[in-house]
Length: 150
Image (cartoon, rainbow, N blue to C red; front, top):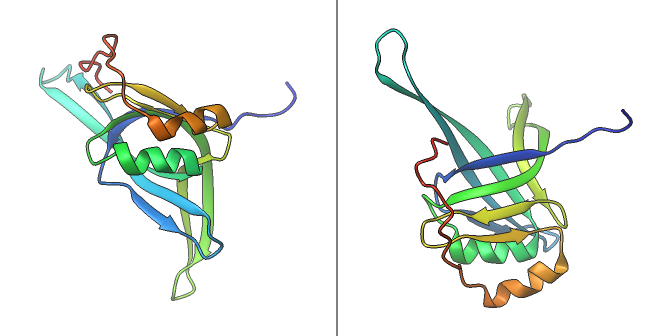
């Protein structure tokens, strides 16, 4: 097999309201955490168990950032696709630090709003989708099952 693939797909809930920042070069980014959970019944005790993982999300697409600003908040349920990136830096004491996050860049990635109020797909892969976001209104969807244990 020639080549490789770096693709992450998650369904989870936003941990706190997204933070929107403007960088020194004028680029904007949206940053938030996403919780994914799994639950199971313990074979020994029969009690319900749950494990939650937290993921750092960085979005570098202006169209998606606009939608995130308006519609995504703490508790929002999202489906997203991005790529995994690890950054390395030195802290104030000179110690090397690492951070791994899911990154959605310009023209690569997708966010689907899964809240019970409605569902809509916002894709970073198409300028056409970005242009449609100005008049975006979530549409009701009857095929969402909120009882899925994600």
